[in-house]
Length: 213
Image 1 (cartoon, rainbow, N blue to C red):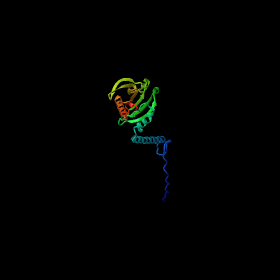
Image 2: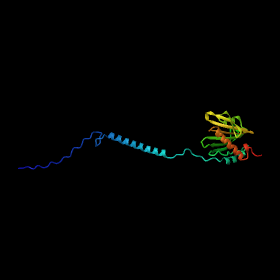
Image 3: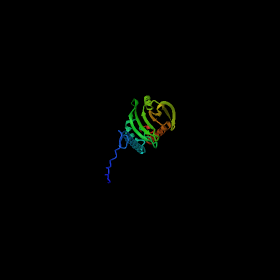
């Protein structure tokens, strides 16, 4: 007599044991967290690098250009304030007038001032005044020391140099009126401004700024 056995019920496989601190794949949870932080840091660095490249490639202006001052218009308004005709330099080409005004300078000397920036970026100033003083001269040359003479257009000009600040000045006085040009760039650059100033006075029919009788 044969006996038929009943099939045994399949039993589920026992779940794999997980060590404390590990996930179901056996990866330590701490290491997994550190990996996420590292990925975030790397992503941020990549984004910052891309932003830096874009900013670097964007065109940027070298300087903010200011409109040129109308020296002729300023001189026209200053005539009544001065005992001489204020000079309007004729040129030089490529230079930009940055200021033009009348001010009471050292020792109360009324002075016609015109400022320029050359095409090389040097800053120069033209100062014209009557009955100037030694203190005025010292202030305008920034305590420059006498540095010889220079002939421009057949006339002799006194040179002053403030060596520590690389400040050059040319000065000439005629009939009680002084024309002084000062600034950067050297004496040859200042000589261009002297020539332009004398040309401006000549064009206006007032050599050396003398007002018509």
